[in-house]
Image 1 (cartoon, rainbow over the protein chains, first blue to last red):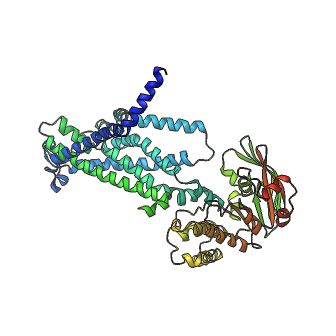
Image 2: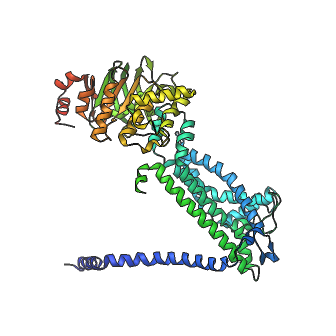
Image 3: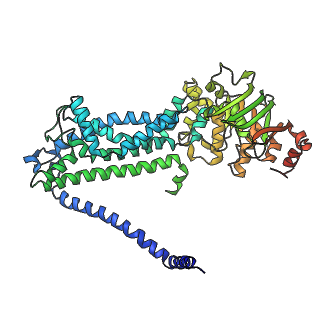
Length: 298
Length: 252
């Protein structure tokens, strides 16, 4: 017997004896650490934030560089930026996803080009989108620091994520539906709008909700594009401050701004948790519409 | 009447069906049997040009359905498929209500009057024996129905367009014996009314249903019809040794 096989036997018996317990410990501890970190952050923000939190905080304008007052104008700016983003991102991603998932006579090369581009864009750090948005929208297109420039920049950033999730949602619709539709002589238009897209809708909505979450929590891309100004924007060409930028500014640049930063962070966190909850619900509904047999188990 | 002459189906370089010739007289049931992967489904799909949906698929030969050339230049596949009902192995109702499943195609093809839509819905559901089971829940999701009910709904969805031909690709193979018997007697009741081509792996079913039998087998990679004829005669007195062994349950 050479030493190698003996070692194999030893390690085999070791893993037999301690395998299950060791595996539990090795995988359990990291999982606990992750959950613990999330819990810590959540508890810290809510503990510090909710003491400041009130209806008045949401409905009054910031004063004294944000140390006093509330975040009403910040909320308005955030919603306007998000609105612009959604107006651009929803139709563009829907059309691209349909094109990628449903076109029959496809050029493999073109598809690969589009997918590569999406993957690279999705992996880009948001600060790069911020610089691009600043150079292109603010300077080249002369929008200046504005809600519009910020919304468009966020749209560019969120687009790859939303296209990919929508494409997967459309692909997940079983081919049986398309075959049935074709055998009935339904047009591709009817098949798409009456059957495929409605079936894909919950999963696409879940992707949209995740994208909204990503847009809401974005700071770097907005500092360079929609700016810092805390007053309420009067038009899309006004500068405005998003919630995440407000948190950043209060925490980093305003001495004594921490309490209000915590309160804003708590607000944002609650919104994101709600959005996440919606996403989970929608994903579950998506699973049900595509696999109705699961329904009995719930 | 379905006349197929020297039909070949290709997937890229691969030949799925080679030189299939078959005639199915109006109002008869033709059973297509043979082992898996010998081109039966491809043959069926080529008749209503479902093969158009598969990238890289192409066909040769001629198919005439009631005298009309399926692959003629002036034929719109959508119009063609409207006059040829197709039933799939796995019941595939749309994730819509029972009513919408039946009326979506009708509306698309120009029936807009509510009374006509409703009366044709009822007629189609009665034809497949589903009316009494679902008349009080037409607006419920079709996917809540049982497997057998879903398959009968799919048949209703096909015949509501008043096709003259029904192509059935193993319509009973995913059903339990009771639902299968139900669908089978339904197909039996369609004899004389539609020209039916049915692919089946169930030889007993083929014997019960078919007027005409076509046996597919592979020669090399490609599927061919190796023997066909009157179903009773063929079952009783097959000429081809492979067919004899297959029909006797010794092969395939």
